[in-house]
Length: 200
Image 1: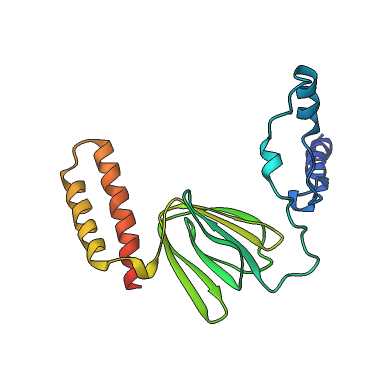
Image 2 (image 1 turned 135 degrees about the vertical axis):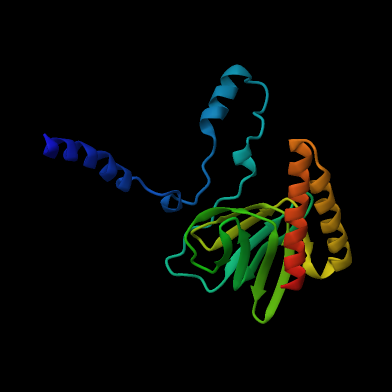
């Protein structure tokens, strides 16, 4: 009976291993033909609306060898800081700690916390302070960094950071509701990270 149970348990595992990863799928873009066919049946005299797939560029194929550069896209809700910039490495402030990303990094999605994002290209290092966001690392040595707010580190005023930290510390000690406490704690976390970025 135990052998039979082990055999039943082993089957789904083997099937899961046989399934391909998204990075193994072809990079060619496929049209959303099912939607277009359904649209043409209902509204034959009107062009179908554009779907998100219409705006997406095909994903570059995963190279057979590790490229020498990492291609980075770094975007904010209101601006694009870096667009397909080839760099040697980026270091991101992940919630699990500082994470270095080199060409050939394993595909990963990671949440970002307030901290310093470093972009390294040759002897040049550009540093940004980011408030939060996500980094999507693809198997084809592309990395997409999406941040809520980002400021070049050299544009931050240390005196304003100290002042903000003192204000939020005062707000936390005088907070009476859970909402006030949470807002004050977020302010302390961000200003503490800013202070560490400037002094460290």
